[in-house]
Image 1 (cartoon, protein in one colour):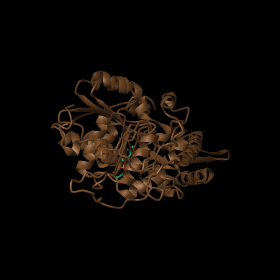
Image 2 (tube, protein in one colour):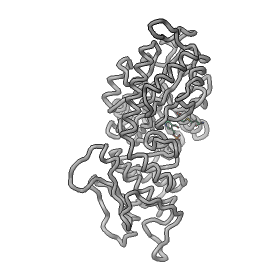
Image 3 (cartoon, protein in one colour):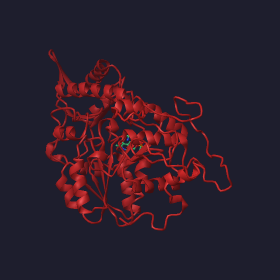
Image 4 (cartoon, protein in one colour):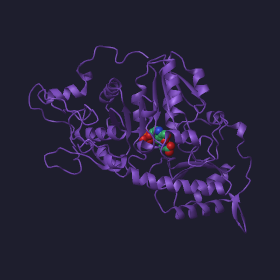
Length: 458
Ligand SMILES: Cc1ncc(COP(=O)(O)O)c(C=O)c1O
Ligand SMILES: N[C@@H](CCSC[C@H](N)C(=O)O)C(=O)O
């Protein structure tokens, strides 16, 4: 990968921390307990008594420094900031370049993601766009064969229009990744668990192979499915972690956001440059909303995950082929548990018939037919028709994405109500045979054969 940016840095590229120091009349740069040297804005951190707190505590603890000691960091709903001199140089000048509400959120995220620096942008795809702007024509990207549809679309666009070579391989097999790694590999882009096939990718093994093939290669991991509560890719060898803040971090489907986090401040500056240059930084109100959502991440995720476990067990016990890393039957159960602190709340299952799957989705009442996940409400969808419809049918077939697959994104409702509603939908759709002893998945059409899948884990 070529160096970025190519020219000598202009004032736009000056590290944001040094701009801040100037703004304070060359005041001493502030470092927090974790050694962060970021703009001295309303800076959330742990109480300064030297103790390390659990993530549950860090999620809710923030420190503000506005003149009224507001408990909730104010929304600085202002595009511009007045300067005290004609030379400018104030800590903030223009919200595209920086805003106190956004900075407060970024510092909080850096803390909970175990990162040197976090940045927030207007969507998860916006985050990936910022990351891929580090690429140069001729660079090679290695990525999975099961990816969120929007990620696949952006990579396809770059391959078609940006002269980037994209290798889609089965990332559950480090040897398949190894085969396409080389000195031209500029980026390895991983999802784990993958969306929607819930395949698990060995981040440490692939990160070390990528860095061995090209020490400059960047390993970027999409952590949307698990959130920082359950997995820290930076600790597993990733260089960049990103996620859709639209999902678990916010939790209520009332905003779009993307989060990026790094431990290398030079990479952080490059990402910040693109955010300022392109203008995709998260707006103040959405930054405030996301900050509010993050505080309840643990209670939401724990309830969602425990509901998901019950639902996965229920479906499996009734004869469905279920993909969920909380099930011992998941072929990569041990690998998942070696990297993550929980299985999350997204699972998928197959019925063997597209029509029956459609009928299940439409018969469910509590489960909203909706794309996305991470919300407090439970959602049901058919990825091939919805979230992954942008992957053309031929590619879906080539990558063995089952057309009948149903994705469940489990919320915080009463789990027995969710199971009742799902059972009703399974019966109404004709997906199960009813016997005096209960019901069992009907043998519908041709169930997906093992050898038609792109890997042998299912
Ligand atoms: C795994 C994954 N990554 C990234 C994204 C993109 O996030 P956003 O919708 O916030 O752009 C999504 C969903 O949209 C997703 O499912
Ligand atoms: N029409 C949208 C679909 C968004 S899918 C959102 C989410 N990542 C999911 O997996 O459900 C698009 O084309 O991007």
